[in-house]
Length: 195
Image (cartoon, rainbow, N blue to C red; front, side, top):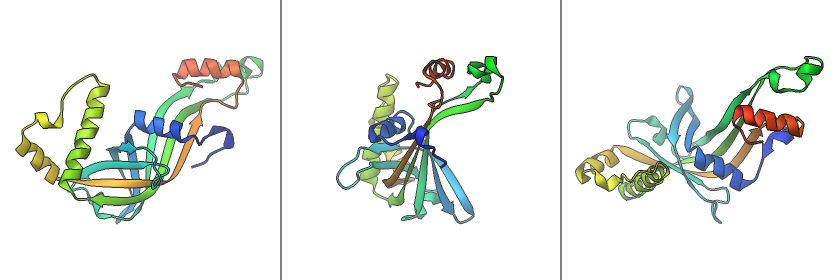
């Protein structure tokens, strides 16, 4: 992605924070018919010695051909807050009118290789963690084990796990950093994006 230095975000805790807050990623790969993208909610496993940038885990339907591309290079794209920036927000509009609109946004690109995991115990544990996390965020209490076990077993058999050890992580925070402090605050308020 095009990444001017003043929009570059490299702090791993900030990049992981966006993924954690917006876990629905667009997973892009080169498929049999060209580029393909799947929108998948991911679980982020924090950085460790063997995975210094972290690990992404998810599951897909067994009918989805994605999981058959074990070892393929992939790109997971996570989109955070974004907003249209009107020229009305710029000081220069009143001075000489030489302004145009733009769009502010925060994104993270995670690169790695796809690994498929066809293991029912791994899948069930993963689904429990993902469900618990999202239920907790919404202040709800449903758990995977609340559903009949035979029903869950059937669904688990119909899915395949995927894992991506992140080997490249890029962040872009386009938040009017090229503007003065007063303009940035005005734009942040109008777009709902923190400066």
